[in-house]
Image (cartoon, rainbow, N blue to C red; front, side, top):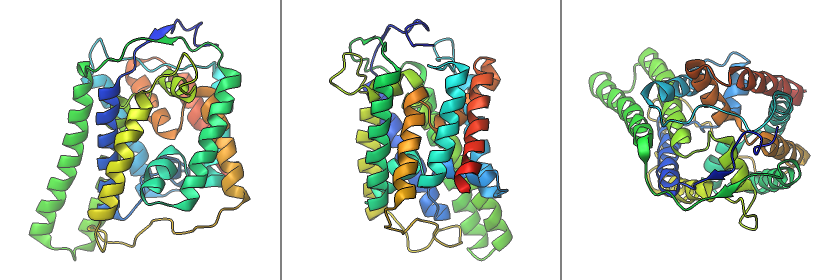
Length: 332
């Protein structure tokens, strides 16, 4: 099913939403890093949750509930979850994304946002590879993307998503501050609960951020992958990266801590090895991303939104199921 058949022939780039969404993404990423010492990598959450990792499960639940919350706090102007592809394409896309992210050990959040902000050579190679692969795939699989209109600098009802991000992260830091003042830092059972809460609330904030940034809209993703040479190019996601990456980099460089505030060890990839798994996995992930314009984070948020709206459930459930299945194959 082409985008033209879905009736998407004209759309408006939304730079302000992209800029604020990028800021929100960077704040969510840095909060999890400082509190838990962990990378906010969505594909890793999905793959580890299938192996019983409780912290990863808390993050997945946060993203899905974030999608439900988007539907609850939205109004008639809030876009309903939709796809730019048929069910068969969604299945194939999810399967390839699962294999690719498992082999490359990351996706757009883990490599492109978290990795590039740390100047990781592996993430630089992975990002360049999967982005190029997605651009080529998009070129051959989506010939009708419509025509963008003038820039829309309004927020409309998306200000609610930004407020949701701030409230989620504000609640997390408030709970941490109160707990630290009352109990110190040596209460292990309490810290364990707080670490799960940190995973949940940062992912909840990340879900609001993705919606605000328009990254949950497959059409905007595909229109961005069309590049400026195409008449269909939508620069919204460029504004997302333009605010998220510099802020995440500055926070990592100047606002990091010696030890995670909620205890535990640092769980940040340190390998600089660039091998066939990284390259092949990134190529496969890029193909899956370019087929449907969906990666793990937006898929989980749209799945949650579809549960509330009653639209798109089968497509996103199938995408996530086959992503998980692909990840199990990529493990072998």
